[in-house]
Amino acid sequence: MKNQVQLITYVDRLGGGGLNQLQSLLATELKDVFGGVHLLPFFFPIDGADAGFDPIDHTQVDPRLGDWGDIAKLTQDVDVMADVIVNHMSSDSPQFKDYSAKGSASIYDGLFLTMDRVFPGGVDEQTLLKVYRPRPGVPFTYATLANGDKRILWTTFTSKQVDIDVAHPQGQAYLTSILKTLSESGIRMVRLDAVGYAIKKAGDNCFMMPETFEFIDQFAAEARSLGIEVLVEIHSYYRKQIDIAARVDWVYDFALPPLVLHAFSFKTAEPLKRWVGIRPNNALTVLDTHDGIGVIDIGADATDREGRPGLVPPAELDQLVEIMHANSQGQSRQATGAAASNLDLYQVNCTFYDALGRNDLAYLLSRAVQFFLPGVPQVYYVGLLAGHNDMDLLARSGVGRDINRHHYSRAEVQSELQRPVVRELVRLIKLRNTAPAFHGSFKLNDSAAGVLDMAWQHGEHGARLVVDFATLAYQLEVSSGDRVDAFAFAL
Image (cartoon, rainbow, N blue to C red; front, side):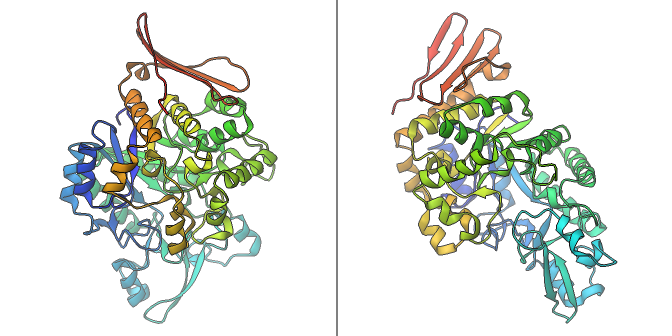
């Protein structure tokens, strides 16, 4: 993977078109801005129950966007990452329809996970309560199949997303077919979506267990044999993230977004500096994604009865959530928790720009912090354009995360790129992509409680960022030998 800033985007929500239009955008208005692009699910269909994360056919490009030839064409211009949704597939898929019609006589009978497969002797309340849940309710759907048979299906997320048995030969063949299809189209990196829930085991919490790591190891080995790197997407306790990072190619730094918001909100860099000192370096740094802003990632361990402390105290974490709601004028409250469907219990749904109260300088300094940390930065398409909460889309869909999934027309993209905050972000991205210092060694310098001081050195090339979270004073410079060039935001 290139050590350059990557874009995260839906194909149809940035520029209002398909793959060819996105490729055109990357070659014109966004020329030389990104070293790679993570295409959020482009499989058929892109508009299911979970915005593409419930594919009917994971090996088919939604024809409204293009085809595999268009994907291959895009990979000639930019590195492309795609999702592999390992945990589930749509109840509208041909495989599930065959299973529904034929029941145990279907060749796909072993593909879909039922409650009795995990709990053949039944399950008591205490055992069921051990199962870690990202959303309210139990992870099951009572279903009557088309042939009249009754099943209790394992559905971690929604009733339309039926979990697959990744240990069954049918499940293994299904995932292998996806990897081969992606590899043949030139994709060299995949993100394992919801992989933390892929393995189920009676009597355990069914989340990131040793057996889950074994599955990830096996899947990653198969991917590498096809020339594909693997990114694991896990929202969890921060120490668990460190453990996970030691086992995989790449992880997200999901602790970073709430810690940056905490630094500005409480005018201290101490929790952020503690994290910088221990965080894994094989990380993709993000401030925003297609999901919400994680809270669990810096909180106490929700799976531990001992209540291992998080990176910030519980009271401050609760206050941080309230600050985000206040900064967004209450809009995020309408999209978070029980206020909207398809929710995640551990996330605040809001654009990062609105979570900062639309403060241009604080937003750009947040991006500077992101870009200076070891790892590869990714910028979500709404974040690229310093986007506002889309309350109209939220009202139409009732899905909380849609507040941060705006549909930008090409004209809208062109207009937003002229805003000073966006123009300066693009300039900062180009600095991160081209400064030789970022290929060298990183150092966290000693500093006052409210100040973060980070530096890079590669031979004679250097880069340094100093941010005072209380005053928003900053120093950003790159150097080569005796020459030092200051970088100042023009707002």
